[in-house]
Length: 453
Image 1: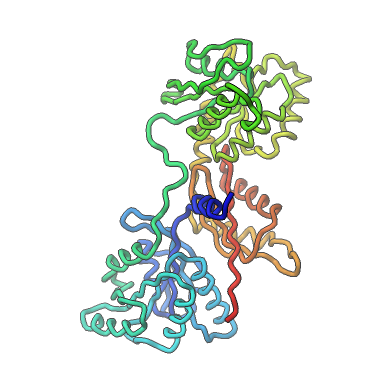
Image 2: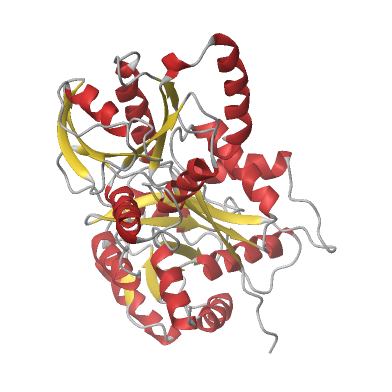
C-alpha cells in the first residue's frame, strides 16, 4: 500500500463531528456564548473571571449540522500558577479543534493579552472566527469594528446575553468548520438487513426456511448447496426483515478456488450489505478455525453480530456442559454478542432470534453524548490511570463518539496508549453503556509534538 493509499484509508476512517474551540481572555463571556450556541444553559456562568478551568465539551447543532463546542478557561499566555494551567488547557483545545471561535469584549477593545492570543492562534494554523461580544446596542456595534485591527478578518458583533447577532456568527462558524463527512454506514430505508453466515452445512438455509415458514431455499445434506447470496423478505414479530442467506465460507478468499472463491467473495459482500450478521455454528461440534475466521471478518466489517448455535437437539446434557465451557473460552473476543441455542429443523427456540437481533441493532446504533463520554473518561482515568511507560504517562485529553454503526470513538491523547489499556477502555465502555451485539472501534490520536522554534 502506498503512502497515498494509507492517507486515503485514514481519511475514510476519520469520521467525526467537527470540533469548535471557544477561547479568549477571562470574563469576556465565553461560557455565556457557549450556552447561546448550544441553545441551553449548561456552561457555568458567573460574573467573575476564572469560573471555567477545564475544557468542557457540548454537542451543538445549527442548520442541521452537528458539531462539538469546547468551552475553555480564560487564556492568558503570560499567566503563572493555576492560571497558567488553565491557559495550557485552552491551548490544548486549539490543537484538537477544527476551528476556533475567538471571543473578545467589544466594550473593552483590543488588549495586550488579546494580541498575544492572536499570535498563538496564527501559529496553530486553525481557521479563526472572531466574535465581538457584549454588543448590546447600535453604539457598541460601531466600536466592535475596531477589532479589524487584530488581523483576523471580519469581527462578528454579538450579544451572548441577549442573542443579538448569534445567527450570523453561527453561519460563519459553520463556514469555518469542515463539512461533516457521511457516516461509514447510512441506513437507506426499508427492511433491516440480516445476513445469515457460517461454514458450509451448519443449517443456514434450514434456519431461513423455518423463519419464513416455507421452503424458500434449497436445503441438502451436501455442503455448498448455496453459492449466491439469497435475499428473502420475511415477516417476523410484526416487522418485515430482509434475510440474506449466504454460501458457507470455507477458506480464506485468497486461497479458495473456482466457485468457492466467488462464493466467499459474495458472502463477504453480503456481510458489507447487511446491518446485522447471524453467525450459525453447528452446536454439535467444536468451534473451528473457520468459525473464528468468519467472526474476524464480521468484526473487521463493523457489523452487529448474533451467534446462533444450531442442531442443539443433537447435543446431550454432558456434551452441552463441556461445549458451553469451550464457547466461553473460544469466544472471549466476542463476549458482547448475544448467543442463542436453536434447532432450525424443528423450530425449537427459533422465536429467540428476533429479540437478539433487535438488541444487537440497538447496541450498534447507540450514541452517547460528548459530555457523557468525557465525564466517563474522567472518572475512568482518575480511578485507573494509564501505567507509566519510559518515564511518561499517556493521558486522555478529550474524547468524542465519531459515529455509530458501529460505535466509533476518537480519543485525543498526549501519547500512544498501550493496547491493553485500549482493551480496558472498551471493556469499561461496555459495562457503562451496554453496546450489546456490536464491535467498538477506538481511534487513538496522539497529540503531535510541537517543534521548538
